[in-house]
Amino acid sequence: MSIPGLGQIAPQPATSNKRIILLKPLWEYRFSVPRNSPGVGVRLLTGTADRDGTELALNRTYTFQRTRSKISTYQGCTLEISGGPVDDYVKDYADPSDSPACQFVNLHVAFQEQREAAAARQSGRTAAQGPRVMVCGPRGSGKTTLAKTLVALATRVGGQPLMANVDPNEGLLSLPGTVSAAVYGTMMDIEEPAGGFGIGSTPSSGPNAVPVKLPIVYYFGRERVEDDVPHWRDVVNKLASSARAKLKEDEAVRAAGMILDTPPVDLENEGIDILAHAANEFAGEYLPIQLIMLLRAIANCLTSANFILVLGSDQLVSELQKRFAGQKTSLGELIMVVPLDKSDGVVQRDEQFMRFTREATIKEYFFGDSKRTLSPSTQLVSFDDVAIFKAPEAESEAYEGQPILEPAEISAEMSHWTLAIMNASVNDPPETIRQAPVIGFIAIADVDEDRRRLKVLSPVSGRLGNKPLVWGRWPEPYINLLG
Ligand SMILES: Nc1ncnc2c1ncn2[C@@H]1O[C@H](COP(=O)(O)OP(=O)(O)OP(=O)(O)O)[C@@H](O)[C@H]1O
Image (cartoon, rainbow, N blue to C red):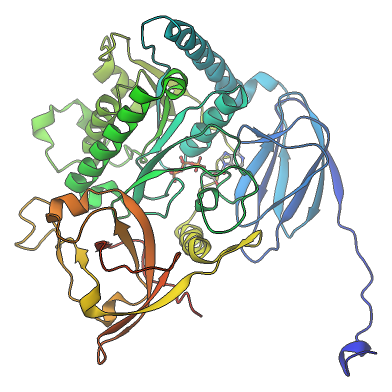
């Protein structure tokens, strides 16, 4: 029996859009999946291949959605590509040593030697420390890709490195607007858009294809470091002490070391001359220089980075070399500034794409994705039963150069914003609340000012009343999550 109307649809001929591509050693299959595409399927038929360092299993079809990335191979491989639409091409290298991947793998080998030496020394009485690597460069130079690759290669040989991110523009295992760190002791989920660095790799009430990672997250609530440098420094300091504690207490993590992803450094507009000025000449005025100082602060506070990798900027290399030449870490190691080529495959992601990605990440946090459906709880909460804080505007009198929090007046303006739930008590001083780790996020679905009630979307059920919520200024409130 057929349902009236539906039985009359003519069967569609099955079309196959499968193609086979061959990659020689160090070639890349580069792809960009448009946002309305159901995804591109990639199946490894022969050889070995990886996405940013994490290997593909043989004969399994991986589906990549809303991402721009690459599949690389060290030994050569054959791939079957299906689905789409997708913009893609094969990047060949007449001389494989021209591929930036060669530099990356050489770096990994050097770090691995340091890790093995650290592990060997650890069996004695000395608590040895693996490499602490800071990745920096201009916007869109491939920083996150390199950091991800180094972490993936380390975990492939059994290491458990600590990955930290202090660029609030893209969250690591968290929503944008945060800084975070996590130990990577297991493989990454390469199918998720961020390739193992996304929110889909964290614990949730749904099933996970690969073991989840447990990040420590601090809330910045701004897009760029320059939007509130003092607060960014505070949260980075907090993250640094958490990272230090982890490296101290866990021998496996200490031996594997740390990889740190940093915000983009923009030198182009100011020029290298400015960089020669002394620190007191540029207080707050020249952001690029300020950023370099901040990078240095990170290097110092995150247990002394002993390698600074610089992607695609000779200017930044020379500036950092000047600043760090001959300097040693607190452990007495020389700080090495290593210049690296930027891959020509790195995609410049425009604001529209980034906005779409942010929206999709927030949606995924509450509702899951195609592999894992989550059911957030919807709660009606009285204005009197929640404590929401926000930072005063930098220009306001309450700010006075110091970032503090003040109780926020609940109004319709809050609709569709995502708020951070802080691991603190509502009675704690504002500074403690602002610098507390984040437990999770809620979204304000609706504000009923007449009845003084909020409609809140939360990943788990349970009262919100005893935890302070912080309302940042970014990411923007553009989604109506309940449709
Ligand atoms: N060789 C490559 N081929 C294709 N895509 C690539 C390649 N390398 C990097 N990408 C993609 O380019 C985009 C930007 O790379 P990445 O995030 O590593 O740069 P970034 O320097 O960290 O960016 P930002 O400055 O915005 O933080 C990502 O989508 C990444 O997957």
